[in-house]
Every structure is written in structure tokens, then in C-alpha cells.
Length: 83
Image 1: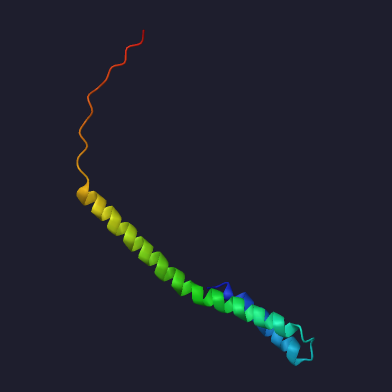
Image 2 (image 1 turned 30 degrees about the vertical axis):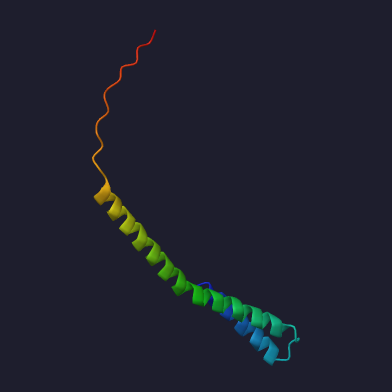
């Protein structure tokens, strides 16, 4: 989400240039900067929710595996003879 700040600053700079009589193509650049900033701003909380959900699922899986795990029986020792 913090990466949205430079995009908003760039958009503000473009807006200032446009208001001072800059070229019209800066409007497109302004729109592009705002679009990218909003994407990062919105995706921040969404990614946190997705990460928490994934961690909870992993925790539940580990807990379920611990409950269903059977003790491993020790294997009989094998002695390999070298000829």
C-alpha cells in the first residue's frame, strides 16, 4: 500500500503541470498514475485478508495432521554385509 504514495505524488505533479498550462497528454499520464495508485491502495487490504486466510488454513491442516498422525513404528535394524 505504501507504493501508492509515489504514484499519488506523481499524479499531483502532473496535475500541477496541467493547471499551469502543460500539454494535454499529461492528462493521460495523470489518469495512469491515479489508476496504478488506486490498484495498490485497494490490493493492500485484500492481500492481507488473503494471507490471513491462507495462514489459518495452514494452521488447521497442521492441527488436523497432528491429531491423525499415528506413531511411527521403529523399523527392524538391517545389517548390510559387505562381500
